[in-house]
Image (cartoon, rainbow, N blue to C red; front, side, top):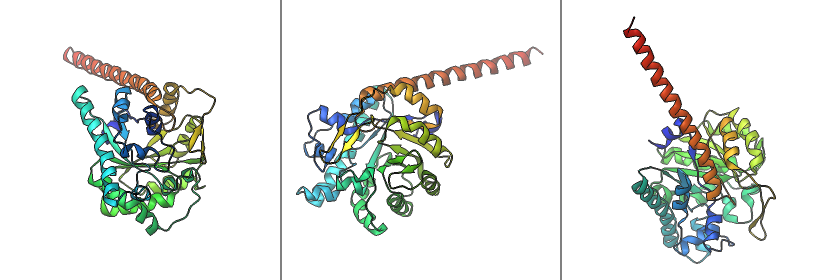
Length: 328
């Protein structure tokens, strides 16, 4: 089953945080490369763990892995491109290894973080920077071209605070790589606006213009905002809705870590609520892990069970109709 059919059939389970999993493996992500530091150390076993927990699509470790950031750390452009390519290959290898073991085909989304993420000051949650379309492309294209060359299943233009930055990327893709499926996920100012203050209505209506965008939504925001945000987005788009919140913490841009939120979230119950309101791709962002992905997977199993019963009932009804027809 291909990606679009999978989403149309019953939806898709996204993975959880890259940073949380790497920190549990002993990687210090408190730097301006963030999770991309793991690529320097040749360590990233996160994708397989998420597949085992029930994820059906994993996101590459390229959110903050851009050529400019690597060059600031003393790497050459060629070395930076090699590490970005490596991130995609690691995720694809985990996908393929998992399929060999289980027969289940999963998917890889190549992460495209914002210019604000490169600044490493929390700007992806504010959107308080301004570039021209040309400047956005000068920043994004070195990484984007490497990602495309390494053939992920789709692109994840994620954690985006500004519509104009997303539009610059999508316009380039439309002209140069229209075949690659794309999803777009914003950070939120509240349940009606993305982080730079652009109304969700305006953002959704603009993204409706791009056929290769198969899903739109939000990530890295507090879980209790999700339902209202889904409802608002559903008013203005027929594209699939993607949602992957964090665990409700606050990002400390000076210490570069998350201040935990004193509440417990049951992602099985939340996933059911979000699904019933129209979300079709559900996962977790910062501070989430295999526990939350496993809870989401538990809910999705109930969808599979319901669909199986519906199919059985349909087949039974068809058999009864045939029996009655043959006995008239």
